[in-house]
Length: 160
Image (cartoon, rainbow, N blue to C red; front, side, top):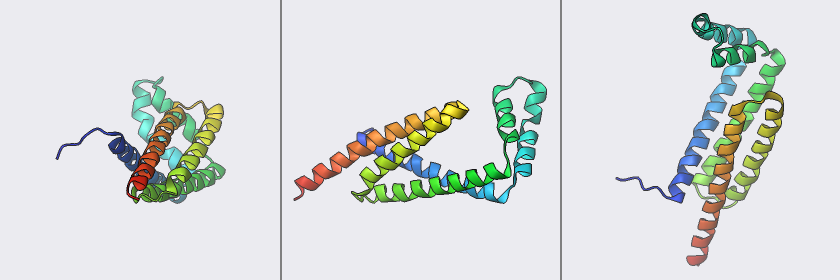
Protein backbone atom coordinates (compact mmCIF):
# COMPACT_ATOMS: atom_id res chain seq x y z
CA UNK A 1 0.00 0.00 0.00
CA UNK A 2 1.48 3.29 -1.09
CA UNK A 3 0.88 6.49 0.88
CA UNK A 4 -0.21 9.28 -1.40
CA UNK A 5 0.44 12.85 -0.32
CA UNK A 6 -2.89 14.60 -0.56
CA UNK A 7 -4.48 17.46 1.32
CA UNK A 8 -6.80 14.95 2.99
CA UNK A 9 -3.93 12.67 4.08
CA UNK A 10 -1.96 15.63 5.46
CA UNK A 11 -5.10 16.63 7.37
CA UNK A 12 -5.37 13.09 8.80
CA UNK A 13 -1.70 13.10 9.78
CA UNK A 14 -2.02 16.49 11.48
CA UNK A 15 -5.09 15.32 13.40
CA UNK A 16 -3.31 12.12 14.50
CA UNK A 17 -0.40 14.26 15.70
CA UNK A 18 -2.88 16.47 17.60
CA UNK A 19 -4.33 13.32 19.16
CA UNK A 20 -0.89 12.06 20.19
CA UNK A 21 -0.13 15.49 21.60
CA UNK A 22 -3.41 15.40 23.54
CA UNK A 23 -2.59 11.96 24.89
CA UNK A 24 0.89 13.15 25.92
CA UNK A 25 -0.68 16.14 27.66
CA UNK A 26 -3.06 13.89 29.60
CA UNK A 27 -0.18 11.63 30.66
CA UNK A 28 1.90 14.69 31.54
CA UNK A 29 -0.96 16.15 33.56
CA UNK A 30 -1.35 12.93 35.49
CA UNK A 31 2.39 12.80 36.16
CA UNK A 32 2.30 16.39 37.38
CA UNK A 33 -0.49 15.43 39.80
CA UNK A 34 1.45 12.42 41.11
CA UNK A 35 4.89 14.01 41.41
CA UNK A 36 5.35 17.16 43.47
CA UNK A 37 7.66 20.08 42.80
CA UNK A 38 10.55 18.61 44.81
CA UNK A 39 10.48 15.42 42.76
CA UNK A 40 10.35 17.32 39.46
CA UNK A 41 13.20 19.66 40.43
CA UNK A 42 15.27 16.70 41.66
CA UNK A 43 14.63 14.77 38.45
CA UNK A 44 15.60 17.72 36.26
CA UNK A 45 18.76 18.27 38.29
CA UNK A 46 19.64 14.57 38.04
CA UNK A 47 18.99 14.44 34.28
CA UNK A 48 21.01 17.57 33.52
CA UNK A 49 23.91 17.02 35.95
CA UNK A 50 26.24 15.26 33.52
CA UNK A 51 25.45 17.69 30.69
CA UNK A 52 26.10 20.73 32.90
CA UNK A 53 29.35 19.22 34.21
CA UNK A 54 30.55 18.79 30.61
CA UNK A 55 29.26 22.15 29.36
CA UNK A 56 28.11 24.65 31.98
CA UNK A 57 26.62 26.81 29.22
CA UNK A 58 24.49 24.06 27.64
CA UNK A 59 21.37 25.88 26.42
CA UNK A 60 18.82 23.08 26.88
CA UNK A 61 20.10 21.88 30.25
CA UNK A 62 20.18 25.43 31.62
CA UNK A 63 16.70 26.11 30.27
CA UNK A 64 15.38 22.98 32.00
CA UNK A 65 17.09 23.87 35.28
CA UNK A 66 15.82 27.44 35.12
CA UNK A 67 12.27 26.27 34.33
CA UNK A 68 12.27 23.69 37.12
CA UNK A 69 13.57 26.17 39.70
CA UNK A 70 10.35 28.19 39.39
CA UNK A 71 8.13 25.14 39.78
CA UNK A 72 5.93 25.49 42.89
CA UNK A 73 2.79 23.89 44.30
CA UNK A 74 0.75 26.68 42.65
CA UNK A 75 2.36 26.06 39.30
CA UNK A 76 1.88 22.31 39.83
CA UNK A 77 -1.87 22.84 40.16
CA UNK A 78 -1.93 25.12 37.11
CA UNK A 79 0.04 22.72 34.91
CA UNK A 80 -1.95 19.69 36.01
CA UNK A 81 -5.26 21.41 35.25
CA UNK A 82 -3.96 22.95 32.02
CA UNK A 83 -2.50 19.73 30.65
CA UNK A 84 -5.47 17.56 31.59
CA UNK A 85 -8.11 19.96 30.25
CA UNK A 86 -6.10 20.80 27.13
CA UNK A 87 -5.42 17.11 26.43
CA UNK A 88 -9.02 16.00 26.99
CA UNK A 89 -10.35 18.74 24.69
CA UNK A 90 -7.87 17.73 21.97
CA UNK A 91 -8.74 14.04 22.24
CA UNK A 92 -12.47 14.83 22.11
CA UNK A 93 -11.99 17.03 19.02
CA UNK A 94 -9.71 14.53 17.30
CA UNK A 95 -12.23 11.71 17.78
CA UNK A 96 -15.01 13.97 16.54
CA UNK A 97 -13.00 15.01 13.47
CA UNK A 98 -11.94 11.45 12.68
CA UNK A 99 -15.57 10.35 12.78
CA UNK A 100 -16.43 13.25 10.43
CA UNK A 101 -18.88 15.03 12.72
CA UNK A 102 -19.54 18.22 10.74
CA UNK A 103 -20.09 20.35 13.87
CA UNK A 104 -16.58 19.41 15.04
CA UNK A 105 -14.80 21.21 12.19
CA UNK A 106 -15.87 24.78 13.04
CA UNK A 107 -15.64 23.92 16.74
CA UNK A 108 -12.06 22.69 16.32
CA UNK A 109 -11.14 25.80 14.34
CA UNK A 110 -12.48 28.04 17.12
CA UNK A 111 -10.85 26.07 19.94
CA UNK A 112 -7.50 25.70 18.19
CA UNK A 113 -7.61 29.47 17.51
CA UNK A 114 -8.19 30.07 21.22
CA UNK A 115 -5.21 27.81 21.96
CA UNK A 116 -3.10 30.02 19.68
CA UNK A 117 -4.26 33.18 21.44
CA UNK A 118 -3.36 31.69 24.81
CA UNK A 119 -0.01 30.37 23.57
CA UNK A 120 0.89 33.80 22.19
CA UNK A 121 -0.19 35.38 25.47
CA UNK A 122 2.10 32.96 27.35
CA UNK A 123 4.87 33.70 24.81
CA UNK A 124 4.72 37.38 25.82
CA UNK A 125 5.92 36.26 29.28
CA UNK A 126 8.14 33.28 28.55
CA UNK A 127 9.54 34.02 25.08
CA UNK A 128 9.56 30.26 24.55
CA UNK A 129 10.22 29.26 20.96
CA UNK A 130 8.22 26.08 21.62
CA UNK A 131 5.04 28.17 21.99
CA UNK A 132 5.64 29.75 18.58
CA UNK A 133 6.24 26.32 17.00
CA UNK A 134 3.04 24.96 18.60
CA UNK A 135 1.12 28.00 17.40
CA UNK A 136 2.40 27.59 13.84
CA UNK A 137 1.40 23.92 13.91
CA UNK A 138 -2.04 24.95 15.18
CA UNK A 139 -2.36 27.42 12.27
CA UNK A 140 -1.56 24.59 9.85
CA UNK A 141 -4.13 22.33 11.53
CA UNK A 142 -6.75 25.10 11.37
CA UNK A 143 -6.16 25.64 7.64
CA UNK A 144 -6.28 21.90 6.96
CA UNK A 145 -9.41 21.53 9.10
CA UNK A 146 -11.12 24.32 7.17
CA UNK A 147 -10.16 22.77 3.82
CA UNK A 148 -11.35 19.33 4.97
CA UNK A 149 -14.62 20.83 6.18
CA UNK A 150 -15.15 22.45 2.78
CA UNK A 151 -14.36 19.14 1.06
CA UNK A 152 -16.85 17.23 3.22
CA UNK A 153 -19.57 19.84 2.70
CA UNK A 154 -18.94 19.61 -1.05
CA UNK A 155 -19.22 15.82 -0.96
CA UNK A 156 -22.42 16.15 1.04
CA UNK A 157 -23.92 18.43 -1.61
CA UNK A 158 -22.90 16.06 -4.42
CA UNK A 159 -24.45 13.06 -2.64
CA UNK A 160 -27.84 14.77 -2.20
